[in-house]
Image (cartoon, rainbow, N blue to C red; front, side, top):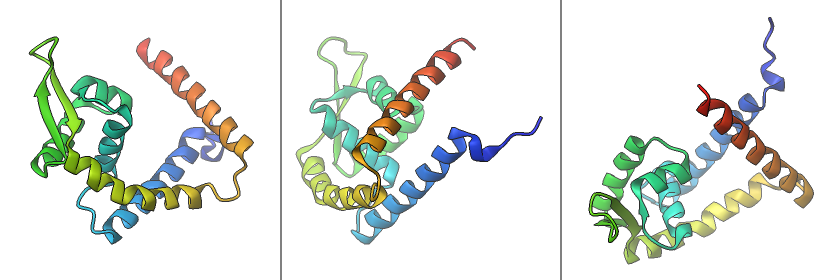
Length: 150
């Protein structure tokens, strides 16, 4: 059987994701930002939530391994961008949230990342973007269902 990587959405998505990550890394580095794109995504996810999240919630939203997220959080806590606390409902659950410093500093790089987003989407119509996002959500749902059967 011949596998055609050009017709595989995974390969195409992987190439675009690699380029976006490389672009983010370059933008963040030129701004003197101390964190990787992945750590920055963690900050953005916490900011978007508007409230502290459990480690598992954060890892789930980011579709990342909790151990990887914990390592990223260690560095973010050390730099005082994120703080850990104990859940009010269950003392065994660690909650993580942005500090005021983290939120303020994040706001300084978001416009730069938005410029990269705009450059990425140049020439892509609103309907193309909506169709792409819809297809990606369906693929993610299909993969989640498929992988949970294994």
